[in-house]
Length: 311
Image (cartoon, helix red, strand yellow):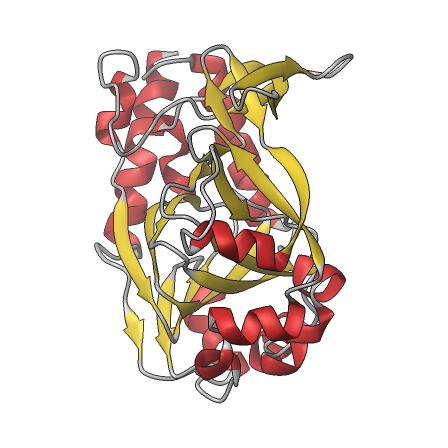
């Protein structure tokens, strides 16, 4: 067992020595599909791309006045939480947001401070909500990224629209997608950790639950009945508890800021934590990852990490 632990400790070191960058690099423009696949997708490395969607009308149009005119009356799904943390650990529960149906204008009233409301509001429903709930806005963007679609030989599984308050935070997690994250206005702050650091990332099992706001404005946590326990990361990378999770001191998080007009390529299986400026608007494209030998190796590393426990 000690030999396995030593291998797991050395594995991330070798990855950093061989191919990982100490910071997220910038590209001044998109590459050809083949070049992008060779340089970034195949080695599973993030980058920030400038001038990748400079022709989108959304960059100049998507302000509150335009959005009220275009989709103000549309009813959308909004995640509401007491603390800004949706889909995150709270005590001994994995708590999901209250999904509230409201008009786009009502959401803008809250974000602009015209209406006071308890709770933190965030449009973050990841079911291709741009094309499903707000198709009127698709003419201002693209519904896929042509060079990425060609590089991967597929269309995106989902195109998502994001808008929320500064307090809205995305807790540390990973996705099985090749993610192109485009900031339209404001900025996003990402903390990224490579999949090879999985041995240092703590997971625990939690009862799933949902926030529900009561008539007095306070939130309660309601357990999901007959649900299986959810594996999730309890650690907050903004304030890591090294005493409880000592292995995390070996992780090497990378921070980056994605500003308006910039696109982050977030590779599949990278752990990420996200904050944003108030009223930030973004659109992202989820392309399903290839379940190839890299995925097999990741699953093996995850199984070994779970078997040995703390390093």
